[in-house]
Image 1 (tube, rainbow, N blue to C red):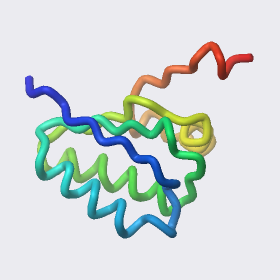
Image 2 (cartoon, rainbow, N blue to C red):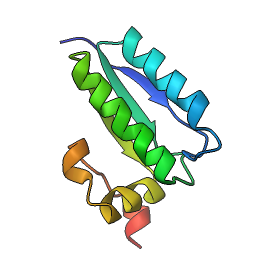
Image 3 (cartoon, rainbow, N blue to C red):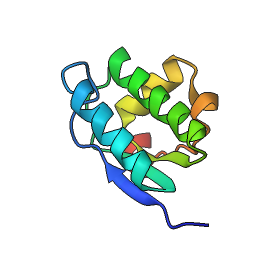
Image 4 (tube, rainbow, N blue to C red):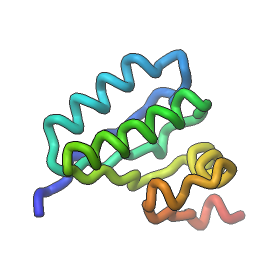
Length: 101
């Protein structure tokens, strides 16, 4: 099994950044056998950002590659939960002790 490449997204996953982020994600998927997305710094996500994550997950499957979200910001986690997409992504969600307070 290949060592995953980690990609940390630091900008908001919104329509304002979607075009650049799409290219960044597609390039990362092409270059890596396995991709780990770190979304722990994403402060805002809208439907364009959610669609982008879904596209990347589907594209990874099409390319026979693995893509996992390994760190969720509270906003990303809440949005995925609200849209009932946790099963689609299939990634474990870790809630830190600091967030539980």
